[in-house]
Image (cartoon, rainbow, N blue to C red):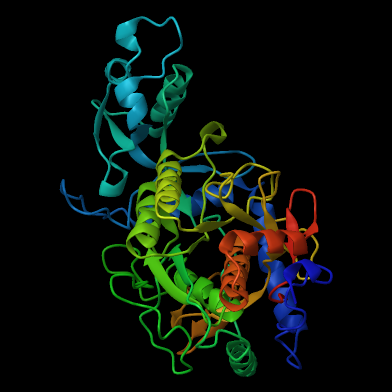
Length: 484
Protein backbone atom coordinates (compact mmCIF):
# COMPACT_ATOMS: atom_id res chain seq x y z
CA UNK A 1 0.00 0.00 0.00
CA UNK A 2 1.40 3.45 -0.82
CA UNK A 3 2.30 5.44 2.25
CA UNK A 4 -0.05 8.24 1.20
CA UNK A 5 -2.95 5.83 1.70
CA UNK A 6 -1.85 4.88 5.21
CA UNK A 7 -4.59 4.87 7.81
CA UNK A 8 -4.16 6.95 10.98
CA UNK A 9 -0.52 7.63 10.32
CA UNK A 10 0.41 3.92 10.33
CA UNK A 11 2.34 3.27 7.10
CA UNK A 12 2.92 -0.43 7.79
CA UNK A 13 -0.64 -1.35 8.87
CA UNK A 14 -0.01 -4.08 11.42
CA UNK A 15 3.50 -5.21 10.48
CA UNK A 16 4.63 -4.29 13.99
CA UNK A 17 2.05 -5.45 16.57
CA UNK A 18 2.59 -4.87 20.28
CA UNK A 19 5.72 -6.87 21.03
CA UNK A 20 4.87 -7.76 24.61
CA UNK A 21 1.92 -10.00 23.64
CA UNK A 22 1.03 -12.04 26.71
CA UNK A 23 4.00 -10.83 28.77
CA UNK A 24 3.28 -8.95 32.01
CA UNK A 25 3.11 -5.38 30.78
CA UNK A 26 2.44 -3.23 33.83
CA UNK A 27 5.78 -3.60 35.67
CA UNK A 28 7.74 -2.76 32.51
CA UNK A 29 5.48 0.18 31.67
CA UNK A 30 5.83 1.53 35.21
CA UNK A 31 9.63 1.28 35.08
CA UNK A 32 9.80 3.06 31.73
CA UNK A 33 7.40 5.80 32.87
CA UNK A 34 9.46 6.38 36.02
CA UNK A 35 12.59 6.83 33.92
CA UNK A 36 11.07 9.33 31.48
CA UNK A 37 9.52 11.24 34.40
CA UNK A 38 13.06 11.77 35.68
CA UNK A 39 14.04 13.07 32.26
CA UNK A 40 11.15 15.57 32.29
CA UNK A 41 12.25 16.91 35.69
CA UNK A 42 15.91 17.37 34.73
CA UNK A 43 15.38 20.66 32.93
CA UNK A 44 14.39 22.15 36.30
CA UNK A 45 17.18 20.45 38.31
CA UNK A 46 20.46 22.25 37.60
CA UNK A 47 22.17 20.72 40.63
CA UNK A 48 21.43 17.19 39.37
CA UNK A 49 22.60 18.00 35.83
CA UNK A 50 25.77 19.72 36.95
CA UNK A 51 26.66 16.93 39.38
CA UNK A 52 26.32 14.42 36.54
CA UNK A 53 28.36 16.51 34.09
CA UNK A 54 31.08 17.00 36.70
CA UNK A 55 31.14 13.22 37.19
CA UNK A 56 31.56 12.75 33.43
CA UNK A 57 34.43 15.26 33.40
CA UNK A 58 36.16 13.40 36.21
CA UNK A 59 35.82 10.07 34.41
CA UNK A 60 38.01 11.42 31.58
CA UNK A 61 40.41 13.45 33.73
CA UNK A 62 43.37 11.25 32.76
CA UNK A 63 42.81 11.81 29.04
CA UNK A 64 46.26 11.84 27.38
CA UNK A 65 47.28 14.65 25.07
CA UNK A 66 47.37 14.12 21.33
CA UNK A 67 50.37 14.99 19.19
CA UNK A 68 49.98 17.22 16.11
CA UNK A 69 49.09 15.26 12.99
CA UNK A 70 47.39 12.41 14.84
CA UNK A 71 43.83 11.50 13.73
CA UNK A 72 40.95 12.94 15.74
CA UNK A 73 40.26 11.12 18.98
CA UNK A 74 36.78 9.89 19.81
CA UNK A 75 37.38 10.62 23.50
CA UNK A 76 37.64 14.34 24.07
CA UNK A 77 37.62 16.64 27.11
CA UNK A 78 34.62 18.88 27.56
CA UNK A 79 33.34 21.79 29.60
CA UNK A 80 29.87 23.25 30.00
CA UNK A 81 28.20 26.63 30.31
CA UNK A 82 25.64 26.12 33.08
CA UNK A 83 21.96 26.92 32.71
CA UNK A 84 19.42 27.31 35.49
CA UNK A 85 16.41 26.06 33.52
CA UNK A 86 16.80 23.93 30.41
CA UNK A 87 19.97 22.12 29.46
CA UNK A 88 23.56 23.22 29.66
CA UNK A 89 25.74 24.06 26.65
CA UNK A 90 28.56 21.53 26.23
CA UNK A 91 31.77 22.52 24.45
CA UNK A 92 35.33 21.50 23.71
CA UNK A 93 37.47 23.69 26.02
CA UNK A 94 40.22 25.96 24.74
CA UNK A 95 39.10 26.43 21.14
CA UNK A 96 36.64 28.08 18.78
CA UNK A 97 35.76 27.34 15.17
CA UNK A 98 35.68 29.79 12.26
CA UNK A 99 34.74 29.31 8.63
CA UNK A 100 37.72 29.63 6.34
CA UNK A 101 35.78 32.13 4.24
CA UNK A 102 35.43 34.41 7.27
CA UNK A 103 39.10 34.01 8.10
CA UNK A 104 40.37 34.66 4.58
CA UNK A 105 37.83 37.04 3.11
CA UNK A 106 36.20 38.81 5.98
CA UNK A 107 32.54 39.59 6.51
CA UNK A 108 32.96 42.79 8.50
CA UNK A 109 30.17 45.37 8.55
CA UNK A 110 30.16 47.87 5.69
CA UNK A 111 32.26 50.91 6.60
CA UNK A 112 34.67 49.04 8.89
CA UNK A 113 38.24 50.12 8.16
CA UNK A 114 39.83 47.86 5.55
CA UNK A 115 42.55 46.29 7.75
CA UNK A 116 39.85 45.02 10.11
CA UNK A 117 37.59 43.56 7.45
CA UNK A 118 39.73 40.44 7.43
CA UNK A 119 39.17 37.80 10.03
CA UNK A 120 42.83 37.14 10.76
CA UNK A 121 43.45 40.78 11.74
CA UNK A 122 40.44 40.93 14.03
CA UNK A 123 41.35 37.63 15.69
CA UNK A 124 44.81 38.82 16.64
CA UNK A 125 43.19 41.57 18.66
CA UNK A 126 41.20 38.95 20.58
CA UNK A 127 44.30 36.90 21.36
CA UNK A 128 43.34 34.09 18.99
CA UNK A 129 45.32 32.32 16.30
CA UNK A 130 44.24 29.83 13.67
CA UNK A 131 45.28 26.22 13.21
CA UNK A 132 44.00 23.26 11.21
CA UNK A 133 41.06 21.18 12.44
CA UNK A 134 41.66 17.50 13.06
CA UNK A 135 39.56 16.41 10.06
CA UNK A 136 41.30 16.77 6.65
CA UNK A 137 37.94 16.68 4.84
CA UNK A 138 36.90 19.90 6.63
CA UNK A 139 40.08 21.93 6.24
CA UNK A 140 38.93 23.79 3.16
CA UNK A 141 35.91 25.05 5.11
CA UNK A 142 36.75 25.28 8.82
CA UNK A 143 39.66 26.46 10.96
CA UNK A 144 40.30 25.98 14.65
CA UNK A 145 41.00 29.06 16.79
CA UNK A 146 43.14 28.67 19.88
CA UNK A 147 43.91 31.40 22.43
CA UNK A 148 47.44 32.75 22.75
CA UNK A 149 46.86 33.09 26.50
CA UNK A 150 44.78 31.06 28.96
CA UNK A 151 41.06 31.67 28.41
CA UNK A 152 38.21 29.99 30.25
CA UNK A 153 35.13 28.65 28.52
CA UNK A 154 32.94 31.62 29.41
CA UNK A 155 35.56 34.07 28.13
CA UNK A 156 35.80 32.10 24.88
CA UNK A 157 32.01 32.11 24.58
CA UNK A 158 31.99 35.89 25.07
CA UNK A 159 34.72 36.26 22.42
CA UNK A 160 32.70 34.15 19.96
CA UNK A 161 29.66 36.35 20.48
CA UNK A 162 31.71 39.53 20.00
CA UNK A 163 33.31 38.19 16.83
CA UNK A 164 29.91 37.29 15.40
CA UNK A 165 28.79 40.86 16.09
CA UNK A 166 31.69 41.95 13.83
CA UNK A 167 30.30 39.78 11.05
CA UNK A 168 32.60 36.76 11.42
CA UNK A 169 31.26 33.20 11.32
CA UNK A 170 32.69 32.02 14.65
CA UNK A 171 31.31 29.64 17.24
CA UNK A 172 32.29 27.42 20.10
CA UNK A 173 33.30 23.89 19.16
CA UNK A 174 30.30 21.99 20.48
CA UNK A 175 29.94 18.61 22.08
CA UNK A 176 27.28 16.51 20.38
CA UNK A 177 25.71 14.19 22.91
CA UNK A 178 23.37 11.29 22.36
CA UNK A 179 20.21 13.42 22.14
CA UNK A 180 20.75 14.63 25.71
CA UNK A 181 23.65 13.47 27.82
CA UNK A 182 21.37 12.74 30.77
CA UNK A 183 18.76 10.22 29.68
CA UNK A 184 16.98 7.13 31.00
CA UNK A 185 19.13 4.01 31.13
CA UNK A 186 18.10 0.91 29.19
CA UNK A 187 15.80 -1.42 31.06
CA UNK A 188 16.51 -5.14 31.03
CA UNK A 189 13.88 -7.56 29.79
CA UNK A 190 13.05 -10.70 31.72
CA UNK A 191 14.12 -13.94 29.95
CA UNK A 192 10.55 -14.50 28.77
CA UNK A 193 10.48 -10.96 27.35
CA UNK A 194 13.68 -11.66 25.49
CA UNK A 195 12.18 -14.80 23.99
CA UNK A 196 9.15 -12.84 22.83
CA UNK A 197 11.47 -10.22 21.37
CA UNK A 198 13.43 -12.81 19.46
CA UNK A 199 10.20 -14.23 18.02
CA UNK A 200 9.09 -10.78 16.88
CA UNK A 201 12.55 -10.17 15.45
CA UNK A 202 12.29 -13.22 13.25
CA UNK A 203 8.81 -12.19 12.09
CA UNK A 204 10.12 -8.76 11.16
CA UNK A 205 13.14 -10.24 9.40
CA UNK A 206 10.82 -12.28 7.17
CA UNK A 207 8.61 -9.27 6.40
CA UNK A 208 10.91 -7.70 3.84
CA UNK A 209 14.39 -7.20 2.50
CA UNK A 210 14.47 -10.06 0.01
CA UNK A 211 17.53 -10.79 -2.14
CA UNK A 212 15.92 -9.31 -5.26
CA UNK A 213 15.45 -5.86 -3.70
CA UNK A 214 17.92 -3.16 -4.61
CA UNK A 215 20.52 -2.38 -1.95
CA UNK A 216 20.31 0.59 0.39
CA UNK A 217 23.14 1.61 2.70
CA UNK A 218 22.44 3.19 6.08
CA UNK A 219 25.19 4.81 8.16
CA UNK A 220 24.72 5.20 11.91
CA UNK A 221 27.04 7.79 13.50
CA UNK A 222 27.09 6.80 17.15
CA UNK A 223 29.08 4.94 19.83
CA UNK A 224 30.02 2.15 17.44
CA UNK A 225 28.81 -1.45 17.37
CA UNK A 226 29.23 -4.17 20.00
CA UNK A 227 32.04 -6.60 19.26
CA UNK A 228 29.77 -9.48 20.31
CA UNK A 229 28.36 -11.59 17.47
CA UNK A 230 24.95 -12.61 18.71
CA UNK A 231 23.85 -16.22 18.57
CA UNK A 232 20.50 -15.12 17.09
CA UNK A 233 22.35 -13.58 14.12
CA UNK A 234 21.10 -10.03 14.65
CA UNK A 235 23.57 -7.41 13.35
CA UNK A 236 26.14 -10.11 12.61
CA UNK A 237 26.72 -8.67 9.13
CA UNK A 238 27.51 -5.14 10.40
CA UNK A 239 31.25 -4.42 9.88
CA UNK A 240 33.24 -4.23 13.10
CA UNK A 241 36.65 -2.97 11.93
CA UNK A 242 37.64 0.22 13.72
CA UNK A 243 34.14 0.97 15.03
CA UNK A 244 33.78 -1.21 18.11
CA UNK A 245 31.91 0.19 21.09
CA UNK A 246 34.34 -0.58 23.96
CA UNK A 247 31.47 -0.62 26.52
CA UNK A 248 33.78 -0.05 29.52
CA UNK A 249 36.29 2.76 28.93
CA UNK A 250 35.60 5.08 31.86
CA UNK A 251 36.92 6.15 34.24
CA UNK A 252 40.18 6.40 32.36
CA UNK A 253 42.56 4.75 31.95
CA UNK A 254 41.13 1.23 32.45
CA UNK A 255 37.39 1.42 33.18
CA UNK A 256 35.68 0.09 36.30
CA UNK A 257 34.10 -3.21 35.26
CA UNK A 258 30.68 -1.66 34.61
CA UNK A 259 28.98 -0.58 31.40
CA UNK A 260 29.65 3.07 30.59
CA UNK A 261 26.72 5.49 30.67
CA UNK A 262 26.03 5.34 26.91
CA UNK A 263 27.42 1.85 26.24
CA UNK A 264 25.42 -0.07 23.66
CA UNK A 265 23.68 3.02 22.25
CA UNK A 266 24.90 2.41 18.69
CA UNK A 267 23.99 -1.28 18.89
CA UNK A 268 20.50 -0.40 20.12
CA UNK A 269 19.98 2.14 17.30
CA UNK A 270 21.25 -0.35 14.71
CA UNK A 271 18.80 -2.95 15.98
CA UNK A 272 15.89 -0.55 15.49
CA UNK A 273 16.92 0.18 11.90
CA UNK A 274 17.17 -3.56 11.30
CA UNK A 275 13.69 -4.16 12.76
CA UNK A 276 12.09 -1.68 10.37
CA UNK A 277 14.28 -2.33 7.32
CA UNK A 278 15.38 -5.98 7.42
CA UNK A 279 17.20 -5.76 4.08
CA UNK A 280 19.18 -2.57 4.66
CA UNK A 281 22.98 -2.64 4.65
CA UNK A 282 24.00 -1.08 7.96
CA UNK A 283 27.35 0.43 8.93
CA UNK A 284 27.96 1.93 12.39
CA UNK A 285 30.64 4.59 12.89
CA UNK A 286 32.19 5.34 16.26
CA UNK A 287 32.24 9.14 16.65
CA UNK A 288 30.84 9.43 20.19
CA UNK A 289 32.43 7.77 23.22
CA UNK A 290 30.71 5.25 25.45
CA UNK A 291 29.81 7.93 28.00
CA UNK A 292 27.87 9.78 25.29
CA UNK A 293 30.31 12.62 24.51
CA UNK A 294 31.59 13.54 21.03
CA UNK A 295 33.11 16.59 19.35
CA UNK A 296 31.14 18.08 16.48
CA UNK A 297 34.33 17.91 14.38
CA UNK A 298 34.61 14.15 14.90
CA UNK A 299 30.92 13.67 14.10
CA UNK A 300 31.18 15.87 10.98
CA UNK A 301 34.21 13.92 9.79
CA UNK A 302 32.35 10.62 10.21
CA UNK A 303 29.38 11.97 8.23
CA UNK A 304 31.61 12.88 5.28
CA UNK A 305 33.40 9.55 5.39
CA UNK A 306 30.14 7.59 5.54
CA UNK A 307 28.64 9.30 2.48
CA UNK A 308 31.54 10.26 0.23
CA UNK A 309 34.00 7.47 0.95
CA UNK A 310 31.63 4.61 1.83
CA UNK A 311 28.53 5.43 -0.22
CA UNK A 312 25.89 5.73 2.50
CA UNK A 313 22.51 6.89 1.18
CA UNK A 314 20.89 7.58 4.56
CA UNK A 315 22.76 8.80 7.63
CA UNK A 316 21.24 8.41 11.10
CA UNK A 317 22.36 10.88 13.79
CA UNK A 318 20.85 9.98 17.15
CA UNK A 319 22.79 12.83 18.72
CA UNK A 320 22.72 16.60 18.94
CA UNK A 321 23.58 19.79 20.77
CA UNK A 322 22.07 23.10 21.80
CA UNK A 323 24.23 26.12 21.05
CA UNK A 324 25.05 29.63 22.21
CA UNK A 325 22.45 32.05 20.76
CA UNK A 326 21.03 29.10 18.73
CA UNK A 327 23.80 29.57 16.14
CA UNK A 328 24.34 26.53 13.91
CA UNK A 329 27.47 24.47 14.73
CA UNK A 330 30.10 25.32 12.15
CA UNK A 331 31.72 21.91 11.60
CA UNK A 332 28.45 20.04 11.12
CA UNK A 333 27.14 22.79 8.84
CA UNK A 334 30.29 22.43 6.72
CA UNK A 335 29.83 18.65 6.57
CA UNK A 336 26.24 19.06 5.35
CA UNK A 337 27.40 21.51 2.68
CA UNK A 338 30.17 19.18 1.51
CA UNK A 339 27.78 16.21 1.34
CA UNK A 340 25.14 18.25 -0.51
CA UNK A 341 27.64 19.52 -3.07
CA UNK A 342 29.06 16.03 -3.62
CA UNK A 343 25.55 14.60 -4.05
CA UNK A 344 24.64 17.20 -6.68
CA UNK A 345 27.91 16.73 -8.59
CA UNK A 346 27.50 12.94 -8.61
CA UNK A 347 23.71 12.83 -9.14
CA UNK A 348 23.18 11.01 -5.86
CA UNK A 349 20.35 11.24 -3.33
CA UNK A 350 21.40 11.41 0.33
CA UNK A 351 19.15 11.88 3.35
CA UNK A 352 20.36 12.90 6.81
CA UNK A 353 18.04 11.94 9.69
CA UNK A 354 18.60 13.32 13.21
CA UNK A 355 17.02 13.04 16.64
CA UNK A 356 15.30 16.24 17.78
CA UNK A 357 16.57 15.96 21.37
CA UNK A 358 15.15 15.35 24.82
CA UNK A 359 15.09 18.88 26.25
CA UNK A 360 11.30 19.19 26.49
CA UNK A 361 11.29 22.66 24.94
CA UNK A 362 11.45 24.47 21.59
CA UNK A 363 15.16 25.33 21.71
CA UNK A 364 16.66 24.15 18.41
CA UNK A 365 18.84 21.07 18.62
CA UNK A 366 21.52 20.63 15.97
CA UNK A 367 21.92 18.97 13.49
CA UNK A 368 18.16 18.27 13.63
CA UNK A 369 17.33 21.98 13.22
CA UNK A 370 19.15 22.36 9.89
CA UNK A 371 16.55 22.81 7.10
CA UNK A 372 18.13 20.06 4.99
CA UNK A 373 17.98 17.50 7.83
CA UNK A 374 15.02 15.19 8.50
CA UNK A 375 14.37 15.81 12.21
CA UNK A 376 12.47 13.40 14.46
CA UNK A 377 10.72 14.16 17.75
CA UNK A 378 9.28 11.66 20.22
CA UNK A 379 5.75 10.52 20.99
CA UNK A 380 4.42 8.52 23.92
CA UNK A 381 3.15 4.97 23.24
CA UNK A 382 -0.40 6.28 22.75
CA UNK A 383 0.95 8.66 20.07
CA UNK A 384 0.47 11.83 22.09
CA UNK A 385 3.39 14.32 22.14
CA UNK A 386 6.02 13.27 24.66
CA UNK A 387 6.62 16.04 27.23
CA UNK A 388 10.32 15.12 27.38
CA UNK A 389 10.86 15.59 23.62
CA UNK A 390 12.23 18.70 21.98
CA UNK A 391 9.75 20.22 19.54
CA UNK A 392 9.32 23.20 17.24
CA UNK A 393 8.78 24.49 13.72
CA UNK A 394 12.02 22.75 12.69
CA UNK A 395 10.73 19.20 13.41
CA UNK A 396 9.87 17.06 10.37
CA UNK A 397 8.43 13.88 11.90
CA UNK A 398 7.57 12.34 15.23
CA UNK A 399 7.11 8.74 16.23
CA UNK A 400 7.01 6.66 19.39
CA UNK A 401 10.19 7.13 21.40
CA UNK A 402 9.28 5.67 24.78
CA UNK A 403 9.96 2.09 25.85
CA UNK A 404 11.40 0.90 22.52
CA UNK A 405 12.68 -2.66 22.25
CA UNK A 406 16.01 -3.44 20.58
CA UNK A 407 19.29 -5.31 20.70
CA UNK A 408 21.61 -4.56 23.61
CA UNK A 409 25.07 -5.56 24.86
CA UNK A 410 26.47 -7.85 27.58
CA UNK A 411 27.64 -6.32 30.84
CA UNK A 412 26.50 -4.88 34.15
CA UNK A 413 25.24 -1.41 34.97
CA UNK A 414 26.92 0.43 37.81
CA UNK A 415 24.86 -0.01 41.00
CA UNK A 416 22.67 2.88 42.09
CA UNK A 417 21.48 3.77 45.58
CA UNK A 418 18.39 1.77 46.52
CA UNK A 419 18.34 -0.02 43.15
CA UNK A 420 19.83 -3.38 42.16
CA UNK A 421 22.33 -3.35 39.32
CA UNK A 422 21.05 -4.76 36.04
CA UNK A 423 23.08 -7.56 34.46
CA UNK A 424 22.75 -8.05 30.70
CA UNK A 425 23.79 -11.42 29.30
CA UNK A 426 24.72 -12.50 25.80
CA UNK A 427 22.06 -11.82 23.13
CA UNK A 428 20.40 -9.23 25.37
CA UNK A 429 17.29 -7.27 24.51
CA UNK A 430 16.40 -4.09 26.36
CA UNK A 431 13.97 -1.16 26.50
CA UNK A 432 15.20 2.42 26.08
CA UNK A 433 13.54 5.82 25.66
CA UNK A 434 14.44 9.07 23.89
CA UNK A 435 14.37 10.70 20.46
CA UNK A 436 17.57 8.74 19.81
CA UNK A 437 15.25 5.80 19.23
CA UNK A 438 12.53 7.63 17.32
CA UNK A 439 14.99 8.76 14.61
CA UNK A 440 16.15 5.27 13.50
CA UNK A 441 12.54 4.25 12.90
CA UNK A 442 12.22 7.02 10.32
CA UNK A 443 15.62 6.06 8.92
CA UNK A 444 14.51 2.45 8.59
CA UNK A 445 11.16 3.40 7.05
CA UNK A 446 12.81 5.52 4.35
CA UNK A 447 15.32 2.75 3.62
CA UNK A 448 12.61 0.10 3.40
CA UNK A 449 10.43 2.18 1.08
CA UNK A 450 13.39 2.90 -1.22
CA UNK A 451 14.36 -0.75 -1.27
CA UNK A 452 11.01 -2.50 -1.48
CA UNK A 453 8.98 -0.07 -3.59
CA UNK A 454 11.69 1.14 -5.93
CA UNK A 455 10.96 4.82 -5.34
CA UNK A 456 13.70 7.45 -5.02
CA UNK A 457 14.72 8.67 -1.58
CA UNK A 458 13.13 12.12 -2.14
CA UNK A 459 9.91 10.40 -3.24
CA UNK A 460 10.02 8.10 -0.20
CA UNK A 461 10.36 11.16 2.01
CA UNK A 462 7.44 12.90 0.28
CA UNK A 463 5.25 9.82 0.65
CA UNK A 464 6.08 9.53 4.32
CA UNK A 465 5.23 13.19 4.88
CA UNK A 466 1.88 12.64 3.20
CA UNK A 467 1.21 9.61 5.41
CA UNK A 468 1.85 11.41 8.70
CA UNK A 469 -0.71 13.20 10.82
CA UNK A 470 0.24 16.82 11.61
CA UNK A 471 0.84 17.75 15.26
CA UNK A 472 1.92 21.34 16.02
CA UNK A 473 5.60 21.36 16.94
CA UNK A 474 5.94 17.63 16.22
CA UNK A 475 5.84 17.62 12.43
CA UNK A 476 4.08 14.63 10.90
CA UNK A 477 3.27 11.93 13.44
CA UNK A 478 3.63 8.26 12.51
CA UNK A 479 3.21 4.92 14.21
CA UNK A 480 6.00 2.51 13.32
CA UNK A 481 7.35 0.41 16.19
CA UNK A 482 5.34 0.02 19.41
CA UNK A 483 6.50 1.37 22.73
CA UNK A 484 5.45 0.68 26.27
